[in-house]
Image 1 (cartoon, rainbow, N blue to C red):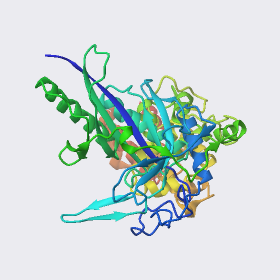
Image 2: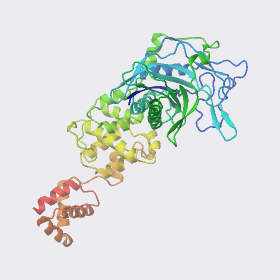
Image 3: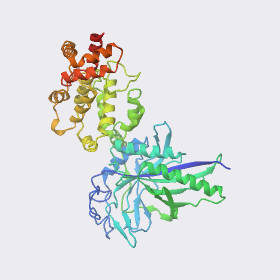
Length: 499
C-alpha cells in the first residue's frame, strides 16, 4: 500500500477594521445590522458610480504585511476579477492579481515551524447569500468591505499545523490591530487547498478547495477528512477531481460543489477606474513603525517566566498580553517589581525571590484561572485594572497580607468600574480581607483558642500523633480572628505551642 504525503495551502480573507468600506463612505462594520442597510450606489453598481479608494485600508495592509514579516511593495494596482453570481452586483470583483501590495514573507508557528507567505493582496468582499428551500436572499452589507487575502505557500503537511497556522495568523492580525477578528461574523475566513502525492514524489497531487471555514477546529477537521477521503480515492485507483467543496460542520464531511476555476476563467484585466498605488519608502516606514509587539515577541519576553500552556491561552487576548508587557517593565516602566508572590503561583525553578517574575506569574495565573473563567470576562476585558493596582495586589499576596481566596476576590473587584482608582489595598481593607501577620497578636489568638475546653481533645489527639486535627485548630484560630489570621503563620505557632 502506497504512503501519501498531504500538502496544504491556505488562503485567508481578513476583513480590515476601517471605519468605511474600501471604495465608498459607507459604514464598514455591519455586525448586528439589518440586511442591505450598509450599502451605497457604488456597492450595488448603479451605472456611472465610480470607486474611491480608502487610504486607511492601505495603512492597515502595510501593518498586516509587516506582522507577517512580508515585504511591502511600493507599487501596486487593482484588477477586475470577472464572475457572475448574485452576491456580486458589478459582475466582477476589484482585487489585486498582477501587482499586490504585500509581497513574500512568513508566519512562525508556536512549534517554530515557518510557513511562507507567497503574497497578500487588497480586494473588496462579495455579498452574502442565504439559502432557503425554494429561494435565496442576498445581503449586500458586506459588498466592498476591505479585505486582504493572504496566500500561503504549500508548506503545511498536517491538519494540526493547518490549525496552528490559522490560529497564529488570527493572532497576528488581532495584535496588529488590523481586524476585529470576529470569526463568528466572518471577519476572517479560511479556504483550504489539500492535495496528496505518493511519498517521495516531486510533483504535488490534484488539489481540492474547501471554502469559507470560520473556525480553527473546522480547519483541522476539514483537512483530516480530505486526507482520508483522497487516500481512499487514490487507493481505489481513481483520480482526485480538482473541485471546490463545501464543509458540513454537523456531519464532519465535505461535499462537491463545482469544478475549480483557473485564473483564465476570471478574465483578469486592469481596473480602469482606480489609479495605481505608489507609496514612498518614508510612508511605508512610518506605518510599519506603528506595529505593536507580536506574539513571537511576547514568547521571547516571557520564556522561562510564564509556562507555555498558560502563555498560549493568554496569547488569544492581546489586551491581556499588553498588560503583562507593561507589568514586565514595572509600574514606573523600569522593571522595578520586586515582591515575592506566593499562594496562587505554581512552583517553578526559574522564578527567583525578589524579582518581578513571580508577580508576572501570579497575574498571568489570575488572568487565566479567574478572569477568563468569569461569565463577564468579555466585559471585564474592556475595563482592565492599571498595572499599579495589579502590582499592589501581587505585593500584598507576596507579603501574605492576602490569602489565595482573598487575592482572587480583590482581583475581580479591580475590574468593577465603581472601584476604579480605589487601589487593591483600599479595596482589601474595605472588604476586611487583610490577614493578621503580627506574630505577637496571632500568638494571643492562638493562646485564647488553646484555652477553650472544646479544643482540649484536639490538642490531646495532636500530641498523640494525629496530624489531621491541626486543621480543626487552625479553623478555630481563623474563627477567633474573624478570618483575618494568616493560616500558615497560625499553623506554625500552634505546632510550637503543642510541642
